[in-house]
Length: 83
Image (tube, rainbow, N blue to C red; front, side):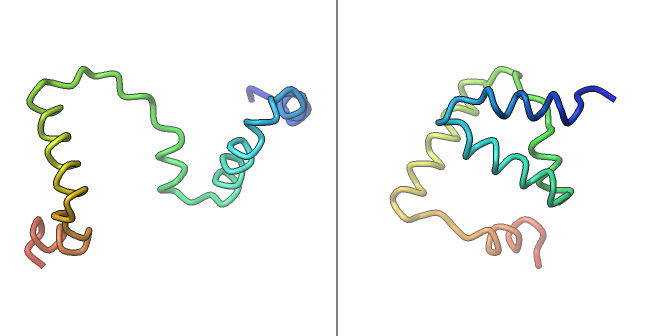
């Protein structure tokens, strides 16, 4: 089974005060059993290297966002899926 609730309580008691809020939010997400949130939380860390081109594209996109040139997620979906 892995960790028991008793062990989890011990870990909670050992948490530094500054981490209590983050741990609480994490537990709330788990309790909510939202499949999307659970997938995001439990996904393994992506350690694949980023190419220089990908890094440049991300920086350019961020700069466009800061200049107010970004589009809403709804407009992006329409553009991608033609809806």
